[in-house]
Length: 76
Image (tube, rainbow, N blue to C red):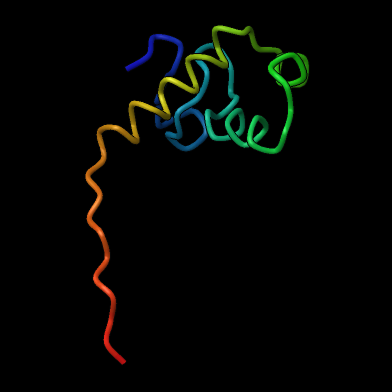
């Protein structure tokens, strides 16, 4: 796991956060997805560029480690 990402049950109910903050990784990803630039996210949440990149790497690794199974179409 990324050193800049922390999971602690006593912080944000155990959701992954940027280490040293209470900013959830999901909030960073959501901000980027909504169109905010790295600079805007950094200013809004007091993060560094490496924090944002760590959040992106964490999400990519999480998706890569998941197993996906195609759904079978249901018959009417």
